[in-house]
Length: 540
Ligand code: NDP
Image 1 (cartoon, rainbow, N blue to C red):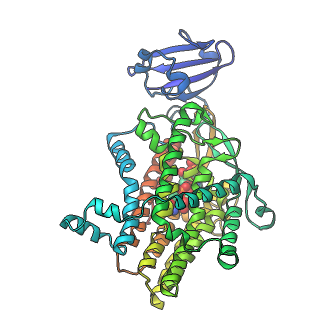
Image 2: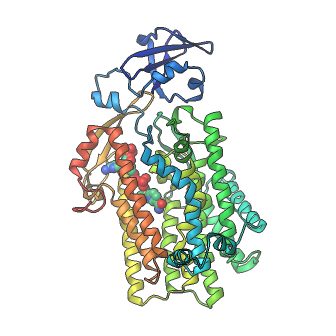
Image 3: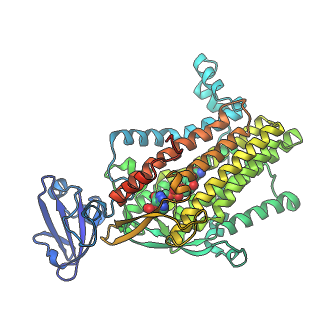
């Protein structure tokens, strides 16, 4: 069902229009907080916005009969300058899904119930089975182990872990909120400080305080100072508390997702950018609010996406390297490779944090469990499995193997970074730039935001974006494979990452293309005709 909040140049301040499944239309007007049925003076309508029926100010007051009848159709209006397709189908419909099919719902519930145990399984497999993922299954099958015997052997929740994690999150909050960026003043080519995000489906452009690189540098400088001079804590502290920390991260992950869910109903930051599907599980998982914030600057997506998890990523790897040194008296070349390749990826993230404002996570995904819990738990525990594996299995690679891994990792990084850079440059300069030494070619497209505003955009068909539609993902996958291959071929455990990244990025391709197709309509079709492959030219 569909409701539209319409703002009028005179008469009642708000008018809700709903269309019945048969095409019938009910018109309600709101005067002094009460809804009345009657005529809505569409000649004085200056703008309208799509509003889900469980939107708090609408859902409570609409009569249930009208609410039952309403549907998701668009109002019939046209603009001479735009194709009817853009006007009627695309306005505000290009954010995350409005509808949930049974298959997606099943997946959502399964993930909500099992994801923490999936993470636990991989960490526990290292702790109890030297990272064999088959051994625990074989033992469970043969009756040699039971779920409770495995559970009993796992370290439980400790107050030490709570203190470490609370101090960590608090420190990152302080760095994020209290120390405005100064690094952009002296690092040439770095964009930090206050930056604009992308236009949201409701047509807003948010401002962000970009200081991730600064936070990363301060955190790592302190880590180094502690390891070298102060010795306040052991550099293996993260590894030594790993499973207890898993429980703490889960508490934060579920708390922040629940908070974001409740906040969306009670005090959303931008009500126009909320999305409700009518399915509570999907809303909880994929999020309702687009850019939840506390105060002017504490942006949930920017903070949770980067700070507790990605700043920690390199520290976690350093902690693993320190543990290898403590246990074996040396650090393997595989551990150094994993630290270096993943370190480049993390630094790239922070160096390009302003650019990340334009990526799907920030500018299209809503903030729910998927991002909140994923950033707190999934990312720090599963993106670092290679280093964890190498603590239990200290693989020393032959020179040829190490060189091949390095080449694959750097080659992947080059494609990933160059493709992302090309798109960023193209969009920033509105196509007035050189891509591979030539003026870029592109397809002009138009779309509408939910407030009815008409916008124009361009899809580049030059450079990596002319070779395949998501070559940045291909580069990312090459890098991911390199991290896994650095662990040798003894176990499948460290290869979980490439399997996961392939699923994530292929799914993201499909999701993004579905969204772009809704947003750009026929223009997107023209683009996919011009660039027919997604990840691998000639294959997929
Ligand atoms: P992209 O950077 O590929 O952004 C996709 C968007 O770019 C589209 O929605 C569209 O947005 C625009 N676009 C698509 N085609 C073109 C074109 N030809 N010309 C101009 N603009 C175009 O995707 P992501 O945000 O998902 O990824 C960013 C990077 O982050 C990737 O390199 C990815 O590998 C990496 N990543 C890593 C993850 C990890 O866990 N390690 C997770 C997710 C991403 P618009 O609506 O503006 O037109």
